[in-house]
Length: 247
Length: 308
Ligand SMILES: Cc1cc2nc3c(=O)[nH]c(=O)nc-3n(C[C@H](O)[C@H](O)[C@H](O)COP(=O)(O)OP(=O)(O)OC[C@H]3O[C@@H](n4cnc5c(N)ncnc54)[C@H](O)[C@@H]3O)c2cc1C
Ligand SMILES: Nc1ncnc2c1ncn2[C@@H]1O[C@H](COP(=O)(O)O)[C@@H](O)[C@H]1O
Image (cartoon, rainbow over the protein chains, first blue to last red):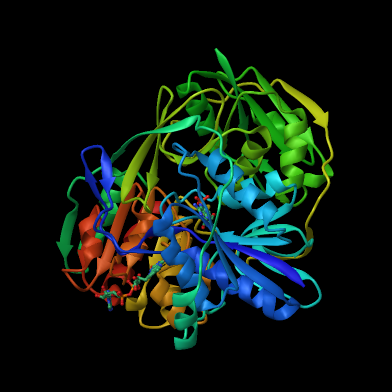
């Protein structure tokens, strides 16, 4: 029996257009979803439960807006949904996020944590390994496949290829897309999720040593050159050597 | 001047060239860098000497045989002096950076592409915006490749420290990549195919060009999802790998926003697509409107004659 926690984060839909307004992104018009890699984390967590027994708790850190992704996780099949937040928090840097999530995970008596390899907004990939360090646990990141025969074995990238790695009980597993198909919510799940309650908990978080300054649009590229017809490949090859100096 | 610790990038028992770029990044932070080389054979640190670096510390331990985040972090932390920490933004080093940052109670900023004093800029929202943050005290950063100039080589003044770490995870089996070809996350040149390649067999045309250029072969998600022969580790994009090579050649790829998320920061982008309106052309430095069937043989011939 395993007490499994899966981290889910609310992020803008990856199809959303991100507009920088003044010196900050304007997210008022975007649709919000579960961060894509967290969907793989949820699926792996559910398979863990099905193989070894136990329960899955989805945990998010965020204001009440984030309840929606927890309910989405509930509809997919997690047992409990918990949100950690404290209105007194100021800006949180990686330390703050990790310390607060670690406190919540400890209070949930988790045995194992699944999360995404990175969040679609930060792109960082810091949270899984950072939490593992704070829990004093092992961690493995960017895993593509998990097998639950006997213990827990994952496939992860290794120098020159990939490796099959067997994991101890207490571990944080950061999930890449693998060969698993993520399940979709069914009608019963959606109905249950509607009626479910988010358990809101508090935790302490230190003030940030890394603080936000500004957002800006990505550097504009000069307009490229476009050619018609296959024979222009000769010209492009020359430009790659003489203009771009990349070959 | 405050101190910084560069954790050298190593692969297959050598110190990777990107380490020289980290030296320039550390100097841009206004810090005085020391290079740390985690290794099983300390002689590899002899090549890790750079202009502007007074000291190289080789940390030698059996735990560095395979990557295990907790043992690497504890072995390095035990002997690495304090200061800000700079690593390369490769998947493994980003992971290590996050663990060491947590161990030392420091905040971490990943994928830094610009340093201006203590202001650090990195892509957010899959490259659809850039974010600048300001750091106080010591901090940990990972730095993207191909952005900072390489520091010139110097003599390495190496001290060797033996250190062990308790390995928490057990590697049962290493599966070498089937081909000798580089992985997309390691390559400076990538040629990728999409659904427009028509069949997985046609990827052989991309492989031939990859052989000429010493490139890695990548793929769109549509290619990976449609054909079992194209493995997920080739996928570039939102739910695949993020790459920033010097040259990215997209063949039969439409340029969906999730694909762009993984490759838009490439220095030069070439697109080959038969549809003149394909979105990929808005991001290409050089676009060729034509079928790959007609274009790739000509491109291969032109590149072969240049490279020989
Ligand atoms: C949450 C989420 C995550 C995603 N993550 C990723 C990701 O990581 N990576 C990714 O790539 N996609 C991702 N996608 C999918 C993405 O939206 C696109 O569906 C995908 O990138 C399309 O792949 P494609 O360009 O190969 O195929 P298509 O869009 O079908 O394009 C094929 C192109 O080939 C061209 N073509 C056809 N025949 C020829 C020919 N003979 N010669 C030359 N050109 C030809 C066509 O004109 C067309 O432009 C994701 C989607 C979602 C919703
Ligand atoms: N605020 C959060 N709430 C819940 N999970 C989070 C949060 N931030 C990060 N995570 C988890 O950590 C993963 C990596 O996030 P990041 O380190 O920001 O790239 C995400 O995919 C989530 O699984």
